[in-house]
Length: 573
Image 1: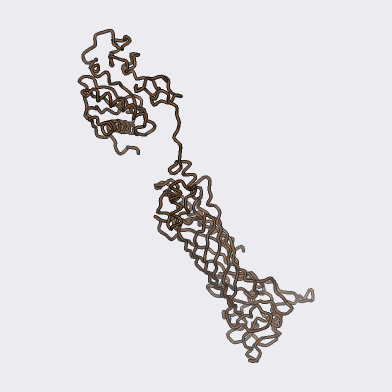
Image 2: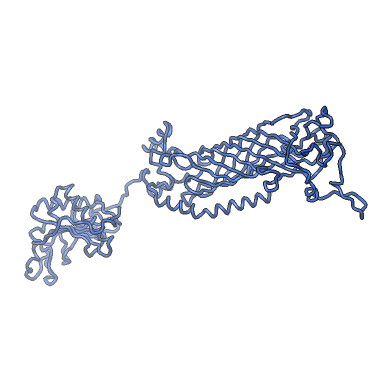
């Protein structure tokens, strides 16, 4: 048992050493994801096949059911190797003190398929040899192990009256079908888990043959006697002169003197039976297997597992010692297999996901709560009594007339800052030195050359479009403002309009300003048929970086209607 602990510790250290690779794989997969569900895109029909799944998928997409179908998932095939030993009447050997290489070693393979997120079915094949050597003498009269012919008396099939040390080797072959239960994939705080704990249970078919090392190459017994019935008990007992008695040697002393064993296991052990019949071959029996294991992901397609399995056949004699007559042995023997294995996921990664015991069932729910794509989300009801695009809760001028351009506070625009809003200002650009102005926004001094050039087109009201975040999308509120602008431009076909975007503190802001101005001009051209050449394209101006303003061009004010993007590589989707 101590040696198993060392092996488990070594396996865990190996898994910890591979944690950086596992972390890198996880980080890369999250970075490269093009879907929202972290493990797979649950809206992609490629992950579902079969009539039943596709029917449920269509019902889910049509909002006829709350539950998406279970995705197609990969198979896992694995190989394993480990220690094989028997819990019985005889002390088991480990590989490093076995007689031959390969003793006390088992190996096999597994094939596993998920039935759900917790349960899976697994087929396992295992083959190997267990071996052991007992330090206690056992009398062949009561423990009939020997079934070879007695060379002294060929008619006597058994050796009676002789005591032997049980030195056995048993070959096992097992095939089992297991139900595996996993825990650990349900995680409330991250998308994936790197370690899975599991237990398994299931029926098996077990075949074994036990052989004993009773004679050496010269057909003599373990003490060197030619199959005689005598026994040299001095090999087991020592005389204590001081106490004037025989004492039993300790286990180490007995093992040290067992040099007479060769490496030939020539004698087939008797089966677990009470009728004394001879067993000439392999024994077959049904069994029940069960155990626990831990599995760690080494990458997207490979896993490392450490597990311990026991096999119960309710038989005695795995170790060559069986119940006979009135001298029963201990409880029925148990086969134990402690192994380390590698698993490999098999399947098309574009149409199948990882085995379901690695997937978090909360993927779909968390994805939809964070960024709904399938869930029906009602439109937000934000009151805006005057319809100027600014919510009443933030509108400082709640009674703005319909169609009048407003600033971010919901108040009518005042381009020249003379206190008269643009929609009532008859002199749209009044020089500062001519202010204050009258009720119509006209200054008190003669207008310098060009300052009143916009008067001819003064019935085209100025306005501002307020964008949110990094978006360049024309919202319904903006569409109402631009419809009003389009009507005014159609009524004044000789007037041009300046579309100006603010934002010049960084390259990103300049590109965002360009995107928004371009979106406004394209919208006016495509949706309302206004000639693009009637616009003056300006971007990267000083001011509120979230705002794009429009106004009528002054007399002689001209400029390009189309400008190349300044930093297209910095454009945000």
